[in-house]
Amino acid sequence: MTIYLATNNAHKLKEITPLFPGHLILKTINDLGFTGDLPETGKTLEENAKQKAKIIWNKYKVPCFADDTGLEVYALGGEPGVYSARYAGRHCSAEDNVSLLLKKLESKTNRNARFRTVIALFLDGEQYFFEGKINGKISEIRKGIGGFGYDPVFIPEGYETTFAEMEFEEKNKISHRAKAVRALVEFLTFQKIQVLPKSFL
Ligand code: IMP
Image 1 (spheres, rainbow, N blue to C red):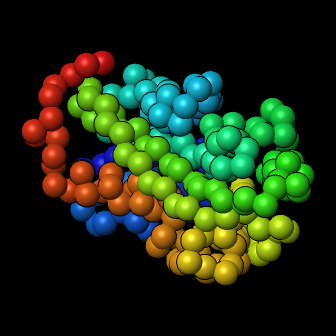
Image 2 (image 1 turned 120 degrees about the vertical axis):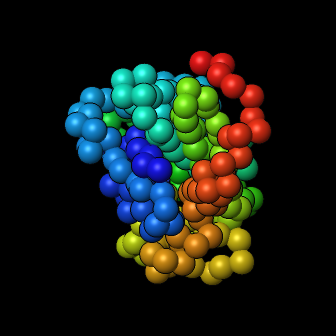
């Protein structure tokens, strides 16, 4: 089976590609010639993931999926959550987002946080969702140069290093995105679609 990933984010593609086994062929929306926008205007990760995948399904009617990820910080009531990409403002950089996060946490002693990824899959007109989470905490300062986004300040539970200090393979073994992708791959591999109800699109 060939399945298309609805993203323009090269970091995500780099992390997701090695998680796909040989019997599932992963292609991108570039392979479809899609050059349009994939807006994220939903109020939840689920809505955003669905919104992005649905654009590709509606246009090409091919098996496709999209992920949406949020960093949920306990002391900030779950912020930045679904607004992780534009926490410091619509046109701000990851640097700006991390700076704002560290500033908001300056006076907080509880630095617990988690990453949550939701994948929306469109397959034969059906939609399915998969989730992956990882608990951790936000460091006082940035550490490491790997990864992307909030990686320099996220220390996963059971580790002393941030995601950005880890080897690529290590993050990709334990991360929120890896867990969600593994659930997707398992679903596709064992064809659980055969026992799920038909179309509600
Ligand atoms: P998106 O909406 O799924 O693209 O993700 C929202 C934002 O969360 C991104 O712009 C990144 O800043 C951040 N993000 C997503 N995944 C990761 C990750 O694996 N590590 C660190 N930050 C991430």
